[in-house]
Length: 333
Image (cartoon, rainbow, N blue to C red; front, side):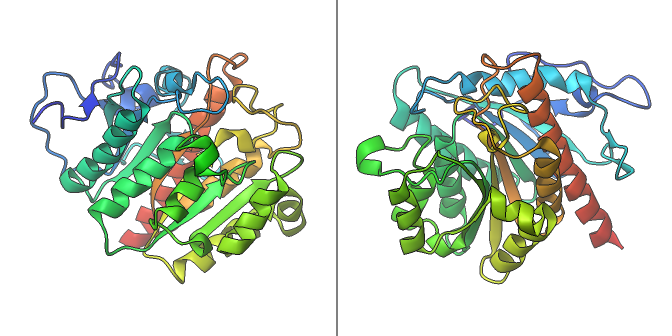
């Protein structure tokens, strides 16, 4: 078995292991070395996987550079959330490296992404996977991999996004504008098992809303979110999904944030979420027992300013893990 299975390659750099009692995030997350051919996954709680694909984006994007950019930014964070008084260091987290990508063959790259998810479910199904994209096309491939590994499971999607991502596959193919439609039309998920939170403004065609209505997709605009509150909105989504599905997949498109908070996304827009709203949403998702996987997509570090968006992305990941830590603590009581 190649590192640690064939679809993956080691990250381009490795941080030093923790030296003191209070490690930084980069010292706390374990990174495999290229020499490790046999890995004991039994003690791993969470895996991190880079999915560096952005050639499938509708607009020009360097989201493929995001996994490395987020890893580089880990050194600015402590694995302790002051406001929740939660120490993350008891969590055992393993950075698996990146899914291999073909230079020009997007369908092959997509297949490798699907195969990587299948391998993760085969080798360490108990560990919660967090995927660092990459553009939003990767979500369809990752969820298809989950479904392939667990065909008996009904999968729900909690999507935090400015866009429906329901564009026509005939016009756009398996791009970053079509992942949810791809999953619905492939029969991987049901439209009614999708909750999209954060839609706003002038960034979706009317025909996409009509398609969402036709397929039963449940969506909450940002204006509605602010009328109801982010906590009650996300709780309603989780409550509804948990009554129907076996597992919930959380996908966070960083363009859900306002351009002021996320200049480093390919489709940055005014009128989006604030970071505190997004952090609250992912904390709640992380604390829910059915949320078993998460991805962070459409973060382009080449467009970023002073790491504003990259640091927001790391904060999203760590806040989700804070909710996950809370979940584990409640389960152990």
